[in-house]
Image (cartoon, one colour):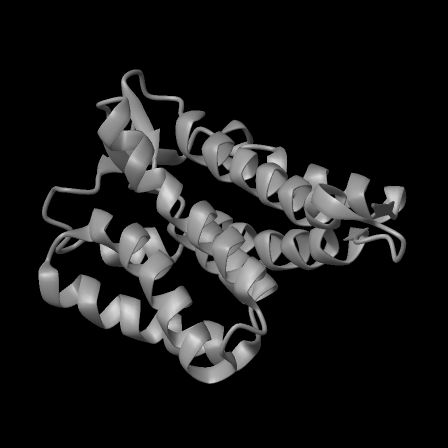
Length: 208
């Protein structure tokens, strides 16, 4: 296996630092299963979601280019790069989900797993997979379904457009995107999403 240690180091920093440890005091968490009417503005307006998306795209791209199969690799060693890449990206997905400030909660990394798909898969495949997943999730009215649906959509659309050309990448993307949903099933926790707290309004001091 050929390793570019500089790219790999940057990729691990981008992918493995849980975003929740970077949240400030104005970031609060709301259970995904609850009604979100009136909360979308503060959720989409939180810049950490955009950061999560962009760092996942860059981190996944760096990871994919940092590990390559050695030309002389034989037998099981031919799959060493794929196995290492899948393991590291899976760990990233686990960290982003399970490291959460509120007790007994798991963070829903919607933007992060979307970035992983965009960084790993061809743009056409990733774009169609995300649009289809978003439509199905909104139709189901069950937000956690986003994760398994994205895993299935990525593989289905990837196979439709590229056949088996990106088979190993599709497997990596499917594992990483399906893990948050699977983890919540295995370790029952409330799935929460971060958004901005309301600004405190202080009453003006009465004139003296």
